[in-house]
Length: 82
Ligand code: SF4
Image 1 (cartoon, rainbow, N blue to C red):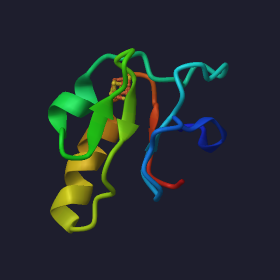
Image 2 (cartoon, protein in one colour):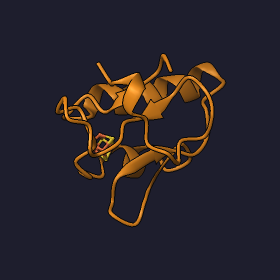
Image 3 (cartoon, helix red, strand yellow):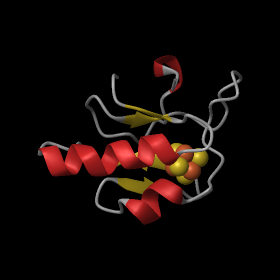
């Protein structure tokens, strides 16, 4: 589960977030590019390739698309309960 205490500073406010790559619990983003290539309207990469949320999903379809990225993230770095 993504650590709510270690959010990336660029996440737009809302429930969905990515965690900071420096999360000591091992749940930090590893810049694998899954989420921002899979859902570029909602996730973007910073200068280091680490992900953050740019837009909160609102419709069922948007939530489903973001949930796919959450499920696919190899290090549990995406949360939807922030
Ligand atoms: S899928 Fe996870 S590890 Fe990969 S870029 Fe997105 S937040 Fe980072």
